[in-house]
Length: 355
Ligand code: KG4
Image (cartoon, rainbow, N blue to C red; front, side):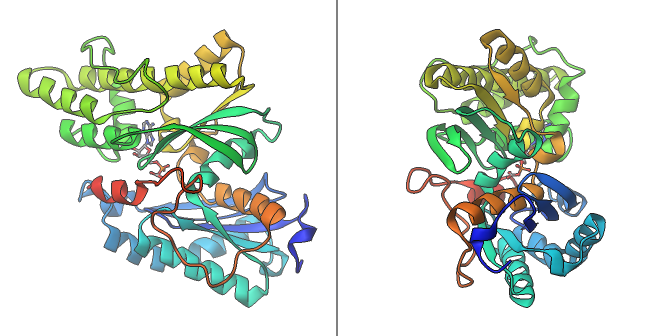
């Protein structure tokens, strides 16, 4: 394939993702058929620091990127010549980490003489649900909850979305990570709280539900402070009860606003994306409420919620089909916005602050 106008169901895209602490590569055909998806996590490398160390992440990506790409090609059983385009996350993320993936993708595209496609990491999270539910009914409302962002978007079609609301301070995942670190219950924080909460009482502490009835924006930093104050005042409180009560407060607000936005915008489907979408309670609450309100639900599998390259390849396929290839001289953009000039993501800052 030499031009973007031949993008169809047989078009094979190699996706590459290195924006934070996962080195990932995937081969996806036709935008939704995942032939392989390899994710090499650096969790163990960063665990002893309690968060992602940007310098170490960049070096680890450098060591892992080639083996991970080769493994993705081998697992998919495709020869490099069968790749029609190379898509990569260009932002937002940690600059040293992004640069490794962007350089690898450009080199691969150049060597194979194939189109190069720069992908917005946040936009790619929106495609994770489409990979698993290609018949997703639009309009949809998407709740994108990760370590660096909490966004509520209305989506009319792939590539067409409108920002409804965002966090005004901490991202939901950032709150999970910081509370887990404060409670000293494990790293990464989200899965640790998810596990601890299953042994705790979600009604043990009545934590605040900030801005519950107030627009589509979110605020989680007050909740984080409320958790810290409560534990300092009640040092004997069970961590599992605090984890469960904290998680219940976050999920109540996320699920309520998602459903309200879906009702207000006349959506047919509600969609979750981003690492926090792997949360057990959030998934079950959204499924429960969607049934009550009559919405279809698209919940990506847990592996598709957290960072992966299949969603990058999928987003790359749509971008190539609708907008053509990117220029080889575009670079990594740590603060890349999702909705042009509407949202300035704080993802790269939040990724650093998680430490
Ligand atoms: O999307 P992601 O993999 O990377 C970013 O782009 O940030 O999201 C990572 C975030 C972290 O804050 C992590 O603690 C959170 O997602 N997370 C969870 C769960 N799994 C991952 N939060 C709550 N419950 C989970 N099961």
